[in-house]
Structures are given as structure tokens and as C-alpha cells.
Length: 92
Image 1 (cartoon, rainbow, N blue to C red):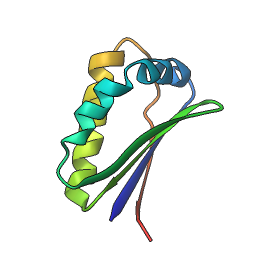
Image 2 (cartoon, rainbow, N blue to C red):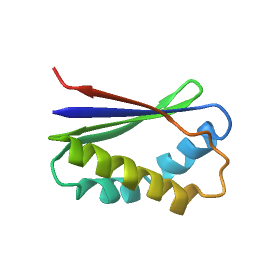
Image 3 (cartoon, rainbow, N blue to C red):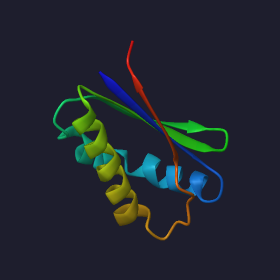
Image 4 (cartoon, rainbow, N blue to C red):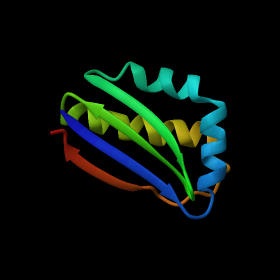
């Protein structure tokens, strides 16, 4: 299993996660059809938020990154948010 964490901090991060919090159903619908998706979650942090995606393989992870980017552009395109820090890993 593969894991990706997208960490949003800095300018616009709190505003972005306000939008995510109010549109979680839409975001979940976007992510749930990713082939091999196991888990998708979002969480608020002190200075923004994180999203966590677990997929069966690298293809699912790549697709999740693309869909997250597209969703943000469509739903929060006016928010000036810094590019998220992206961390990859293998689930133990």
C-alpha cells in the first residue's frame, strides 16, 4: 500500500481548508472513484491542514494528486495558497 500526505501551510491554507470543510462531500466524491483507493481523509491543523491518501499502488497515488489539484483549482481557485508539501511512503 502507498501513502501520500499533502500538507498545506502558509498563505491561504486556512481559507482553503474552510472551503474543504464546507465541501467535503464533493471532495470525497472526486476521490472515491480512484482505482485502488483505500482511504482519503482531510484534517485541520494549527496553521492549515493535511490530506492523507492511501492507495493500493503508485498509479492511485498519482491519480489522487492530480484530482486533488484539479478539485482545488475548481472549488478554491481564487484562494492564493502555497503549493503543498507532498510526502510519499509505503504503509507498514
